[in-house]
Image (tube, rainbow over all chains, first blue to last red; front, side, top):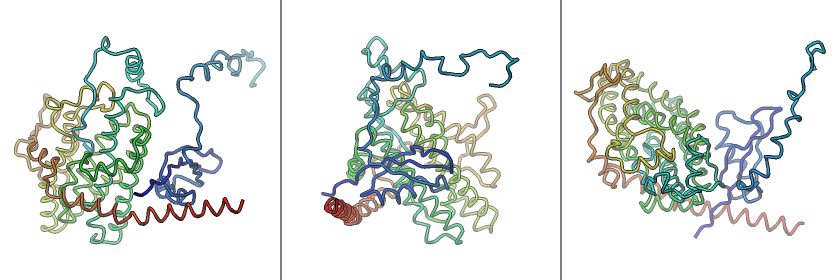
Amino acid sequence: MSSEWPLWEVFIRGQHGLNHRHVGSLHAPDAEMAIKNARDVYTRRNEGVSIWVVPSNQITASVPSEKGPMFEPSKSKIYRHPTFYDIPDEVGHM
Amino acid sequence: MYAQMVQSTGTLKTREEMDERERAFQDRIDAGEKIEPQDWMPEGYRKTLVRQIGQHAHSEIVGQLPEGNWITRAPTLERKAILLAKVQDEAGHGLYLYCAAETLGVSRDEMTEKLHDGEMKYSSIFNYPTLTWADIGAVGWLVDGAAIMNQVALQRTSYGPYSRAMVRICKEESFHQRQGYSIMMKMAAGTPEQKRMAQDALDRLWYPSLMMFGPSDAESVHSAQSMAWKIKVSTNDELRQKFVDQTVPQAEYLGLTIPDDKLAWNEEKGGYNFSEPDWQEFHDVLAGNGPCNADRMAARRTAWEDGAWYRDGLVAHANKRAAQRMAAE
């Protein structure tokens, strides 16, 4: 019985100057083949200038049920946004 | 559609019958939120999605076979390159969808084996043969046209990975329909014999294309729960009507005749009246008795079995390299 190829997460930099973005996943026996497969599966229309692949089992994710305690604390801190402050028009652009 | 007659698990519950988690889940869906792999979901939602996305993925893969049949016989080098690119896209679409299904805890190999055992299905349309080059045109125009109709709607489906796969597929798919129509334009404007071939392709593929949307909703026992969960977002009849309304003028432009005596514009409903396909034929094809079912499954099984040495070889190589790296460290 064959063993299934491991799963890899694929990240692609669409253009120079942008971050790599997660685009999907694929199976491949090793990292080198994962890059080659990612080229064929995710960049058939010139979508990328660089590819990262990461074994899926190496990704640690935040827990969905802890979304509240994890992200809510930042909601109340509206003073972190520039729009919190009123600057008089006379002061000009700031 | 590419997923036809997907059995929905779980009977439609009223709010009172749902437990607290099910109610919260339904609220998220009603609010248009996407469900992600790690979120809690009812078991029926998960199972229905595995069936539907799996069937959709299998259809993309099996769908390569009728078109692959013509790669070596395409009339020009340009048409050959185009067809090759299209068939390669179908492989890619299958892979996006398998990945989406895998986020629900089913493995790729498990799905492949279930297809080969006949436990999972693929779309009825791919059990029809592609007899002439005009069929490649008609497949792109009608079959991909019908698929797009369904997939555009499915971009709004509630499961995040499925929805994202649909967005990607839709972006790529319109090339498929256009290249098919471009073949049809060439054939329809060609010699009388070429035009006859185009008409013949339309005659044979029209009703199988209408069948792609699945039986009428009145008879579809699986729709209600899938609609409530937004696994399905449009009814079979709505999509079929839209497809007919879109396709009739395209056939007129080609100077081809849709093989339906009852086809007529209905001012009142703002759409065409048309004849239903032979649903007995549809059920026969799904049951495995279409013209090409045995060939398609044999081709898939052979590809899987003949490719085993390659898959195993690459794993052995990867293991050897990993061991060498360990030893070197």
